[in-house]
Length: 433
Image (cartoon, rainbow, N blue to C red; front, side, top):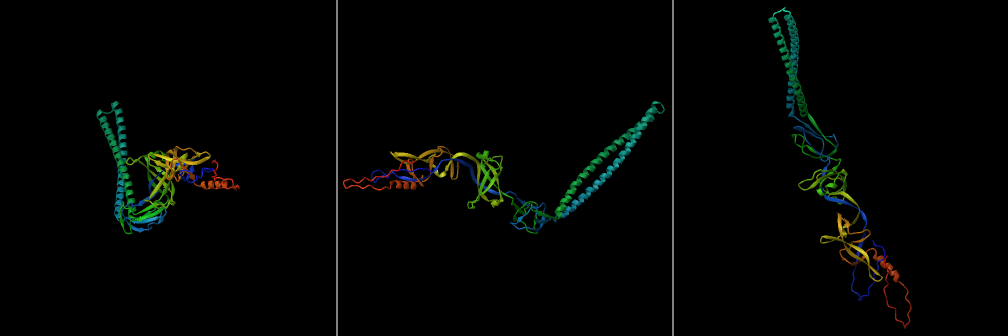
């Protein structure tokens, strides 16, 4: 606030025209930080939320929790029994037995073909040896060509039988492999149907609160049907959208403030945890999620006001929003300066000054051009004043009047009868420093 004295002359009534003086409040222009903020609406979502569904069609035999109850991870919720899966279990058991029988048959078949292959290999070796022996005898002319030809035919026959046996072994091995592969599927089906036919216990997947329960004991439920909902208590998140022009400012870790419409002014802090890497082509916005501690006591589906701090501008001029004077397309502020109105007399004058705005938040605005440090601007009472108006800063007027009163108090001199009384004058305070 302007220091020093405010000097003005008490004008005798009738000597001059009316010159109004207005009371105002001022503020010194200083450099400070201002946050670039974006305000929007968002929707509260649970950090963890799941609808518990049965794996198979089954009958509800017991419910162990109530709606709104807090549960711990692994706590039993609902017990089911799949009565209709008993027949499927029997069918799966029969299928598994059939697969086992098929494997035994294929193993015996392979064993038989392996034995035939060994016999054919021995016959081939014997026939080959005799054929080679008869070739030597034929060269020495100890046997006829017909005898050699007979041994050659016997060798070729044994060789062909050995090759056929080998091919049969390969086929038998493939059949056995296929049978063994089928048994894995049969065993899995049997285990699945055993679980479905027996009692199934549904447990809480995480710490949370039980939502609405959709079934009663005795109900027959199908696979897609929701039994109940579990809402996690570990934390909540708020989903909101930000225009694409702020995309470059967005990143995880940005601070936000969340205020419920019925929160009576109470706000909750959080941080941005997710920024969608793409822009929604329909409305040119970016989806953002922020995480809050569950102490906020917000509920999934609730609408809230969101204020996200995108950036902080340091060392700039920030003035109250109430100091702005919009006129047409331009914005002004009133600057208060001391001006000399007459010799030995000064007064405070309010002068309109055009300014250029930067960041604008509720209650405050950045001035990027038009002001200098330490200037005094009017922040209250500007509705009554005009460009060039004489003003008095509230809070200083009383101090000035007290000083004027002290200076005006003096003992009057005696005057003789032949002298004219001294003309009454007004004490003029010295110029404000």
